[in-house]
Image (cartoon, rainbow, N blue to C red; front, side, top):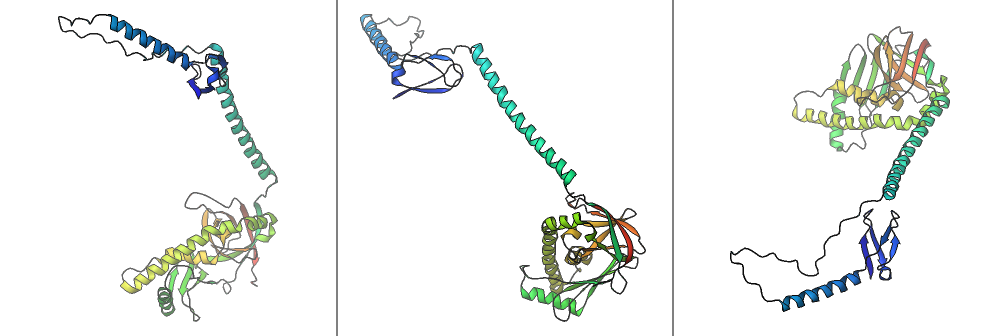
Length: 342
């Protein structure tokens, strides 16, 4: 068996072999010299004291009951131990523990400081040697004859029955629906080969300008590295909105009532299906007015709606609903020519 006891200075629980009973040793935690208790000697002393007490009790006459009925004080039963008061912590031990606590705090602060320095260094090198997404780009306006963009919607993977999808597609084939404004003209229609298409044209006061991104190698490298990540938000929104669109429109066909909001679906389905991840996160600004990106040809060209006759505008990151702006760049676009589509 082992002897187990607590150090009276640092309160650590210690275990030593029976052979160490009654000897002096050092606490492995605080280093204070201790006298190891001897439980065997204590047991013998307790047994001897109990025998003496029993003999003395037998030799004494039985006490007379108190005349006034007052209760007698009862001695504690033999063998009960009295807790000894702990000795105060020595100054050396207290100093040791204070130093240990200070060293732990210092280590934590050192780790935090090193982490902050690493972040600062990474930011410095990125800012100094990383891509600077700013500068000038060239834009070309599309002719009215060419300023038409179309996209067939992909309905696979929406979790809808073929009957629902077909019913909605047939409805738009029979009756195309147009959402028209000064900004853009978008048509939802069912083509002869089936499915659902959107067609976008500029509004009466706007035109489409294609911005050539290939003029900035840093921007093209950014697209190469982050294009897939940027497209995740656009793709997720398009899929969820397509599902809602088919569900709402099928309910409208079955039950009648108010027509679903096509203006909302113009933006979340029509525009999202015409562009990619970079265009989803960008916008144009002309005289502090915001205009949308409407197409990405994935050949180094982004298409923006801007007021007719615009000669210069800015393109920059679009602030999303969660407050984040994922694209960190800002470019000035000079409209210098007409785009000859390939």
